[in-house]
Length: 354
Image (cartoon, rainbow, N blue to C red; front, side):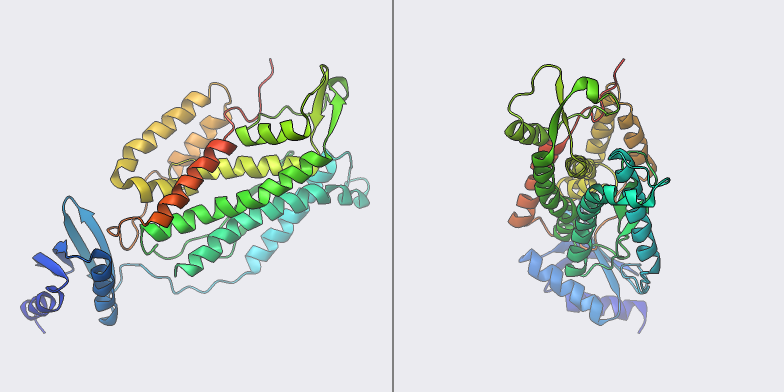
């Protein structure tokens, strides 16, 4: 079949679904007819039956359909969990080590002191694991090829890990799926971090400041402040709350939730922002980066996070279908994610004393 015959075939087959204006070798421009969602599904199925990958996007008031054999929308790679398991076991060890030291033990001298790190290690891995598992399960549910979680064991003196991540190895189907996959991790992680924090605060105690010189002052989010007030309505002068290791893990879990929900770049909040704002997100990105730089005056760590956001890229890969509008459920999920960001965000995580 020559090119003109193929174009005529496309015109005949797709005319009931789309007002076609131009047909190029691997693209079609026009406007998809109503009912929009139903016709988009029909167009995707049409090209799928022909063995083509297809992507759809809106440009101005027109729709652009690209199709081809190798657009890279799907991944055929097989995952081998060996590395995931090794990193997971290593993270258990590093968090046990750090948890033990921060709880008064020294496993380098007495290996049995590792048991002192169990409350912190179990709690932080539970929170981080549930976060990434949320991403993984919802990615699979939406037909997205994703890896198992990769934990990052780092002997940081406070946390023992730099978190975890999953690799998305195929294109997200549409913006509705993007919100579900992007918000699933923080929301599920938050639902786990919340009871962990409550339990940890229940086990925490008040101690004289003179007895806590080795401790580190921590900032509070709105939510953590409220929870602290529930368990410690009044803190006598000269005293401070000595967080139990489980409470510290909860604090970290809530802080990590907020970090991931920052609406910029490749963070989970960046995925949600792209789905909600579309092209307007480009300007929004710079506003968020600017705000992080301003916050860096109070806590220099925000400079690092601003750099990380820029290094990993402010551009966002487009979903396969960038036309279908957001559904009501997805808008509610985005709003809930934003609300959790407000409740868990800490402007100054670690106050700098002069």
